[in-house]
Length: 394
Image 1: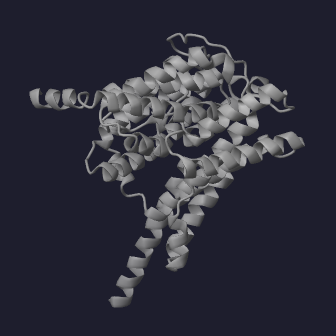
Image 2: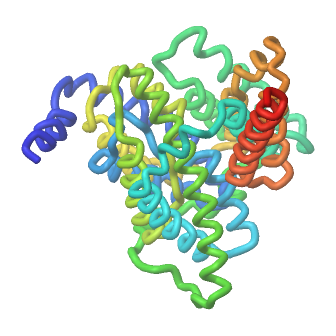
Image 3: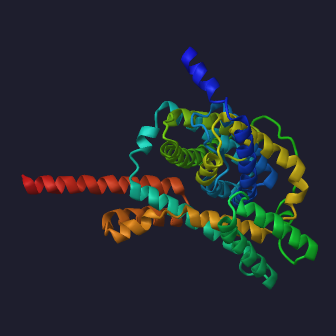
């Protein structure tokens, strides 16, 4: 116990200035995604921003993987929109509460060992499907509108693509949002804005169970959605935690991370917020910005909370087309480059498994179902192949 406390205490100490600066940069970089993911999920931007703040504050204390950024993500948001499109926000809160409970159970059942069994082609299919669904979901904010919308889309993409070639100290997505929001305000551009889709107001969330009738049908639906959210969140978090282990040359307890995230999502659900999981780009940015301790994670959460109260009124003035281009860039980065390797090296079986996972996920819009089915097909075929080889050798 004493050794654990010394290690935990050490994870908060050292390089204070470096961690504060890195945390401010990461918080700024997370702001566009926090706003944009809210529209995928069908919730208010302030809800997403408050949820991001809460998740980072909780995980800075109870997370196992230091520097792992957790917040509302594209994978989770694509499931959340299935709930908000057909049910109420109370059903969403209930589903997130169930998600948190299931993740805690997953952690104690050491589900990370099972996640390691997910074949690489299935992971590639999962990432490609995630990118595709995110990409397609944003096209409605760009196409079918006026010439001004197309002009702002082009300007935003140019900034997002070319600013990193000039400097990496300023997040390109943030710069695009700031400059083009200012341009739209000064020119009174005929565009769709955030306030056209959501009522931007700052409210302190209250803690408690959602106001549902809690009939058998309601409970079953909440459990099913909660299982889907927990499965996608746990898979995504475990894969990204392993990536961070490889990047930092350290190890982390994936099951403990899952339990911590489950507790965080449970509390967020009780506050009526938006569920989250690990984010790959932001976690990498945290590391490369020079962060080394849990203090950086805590500061990211605190700063995101301050953004809600300081920037809440301004968020409504952001053009939707700019947020769409930010998410399109995120979607393009989600596509796994290993896809080309499968084709180049003529690994046709692996490519077929990737296509099955990708196709089923796209058709059903269910990330968890795509991964589970792809994994089952992979091992069924491998098992049948071994039986065939055994019969041939007998």
